[in-house]
Length: 360
Ligand code: BGC
Image (tube, rainbow, N blue to C red; front, side, top):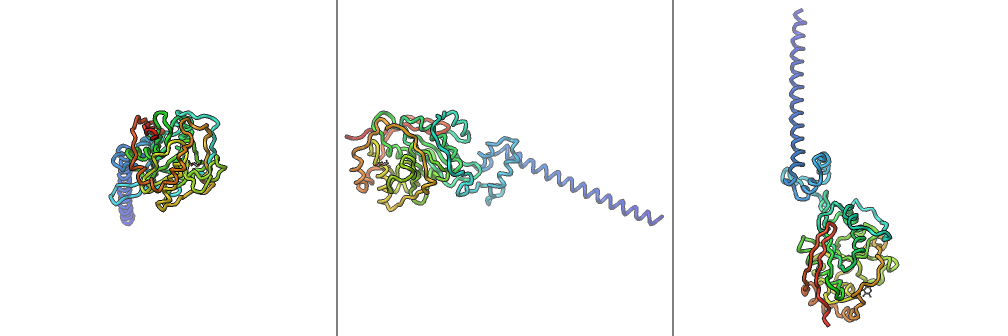
């Protein structure tokens, strides 16, 4: 009888201890859970307390997406030396979002509203920055322009999704020549370079005709260790280069490469020659041309009649033969123009400029 009393006492105390440990365990779990919920809410309610790009990602999500945010942070953000502060990792190269060859056609017209609806991730002025990684380059895309609204719609329709998949931090600048004087493509490109830099610290410049669309998104619209020619196999030329030194259509240059050649010539009025002059500038400075393969560099040109006030420039052959003598005084260091109007659309920044007229 006494033995059984002792056993009962031991059992009773053991049970009490067990209940006590269970209580401690449950309390600790509840405290930990409450803290983690607070932490998640703090991320959603106060995104400004994190880095700029991180906060824009968070702002884009609603409070109900807090789970998703935590997952995203875990996969693409890394801890910096400051405790609690996270920074974006660089975007991988090549972008995992690329799909390769694309079907490009111009049979049915597109409306700007449709294009706007399909590109809601953009910021005003045709700006885009990847949200879950830090872009490797800041690219200004410069399009010389006059009276080609139909072409511009196709360009925006096809290019924005491609550029987003390329994970670039980019802006689109349409440089519109005011008035009816002879067109000056290269001068408009110089203007685009200067105007884009007034807005953002771009380190790469892509110069694109408005009527050229790449047929493969692996043809990255960014800069390389040498100036890049991107439109290497155009349908217009039977998907091959018309000649080895051809540098027309779409090209890219880093800020450094552009400045090394004093930018582009300002005195090529009318069609032709300015791209050959740019090629001469690059080769005279010891640079070579980098190109994607013929397959990746395929592109389509939107067919059109010759523009008014853009007849072939009869002086071009003479000018091309003197590039080495003229390039140091004619270029970004001698550029003069005036801005007539700046329009900000979701899809682009359009800058209308007076670039003057040819001197007789
Ligand atoms: C012109 C270039 C043009 C090329 C291809 C050359 O004769 O000088 O400006 O891009 O032909 O059409």
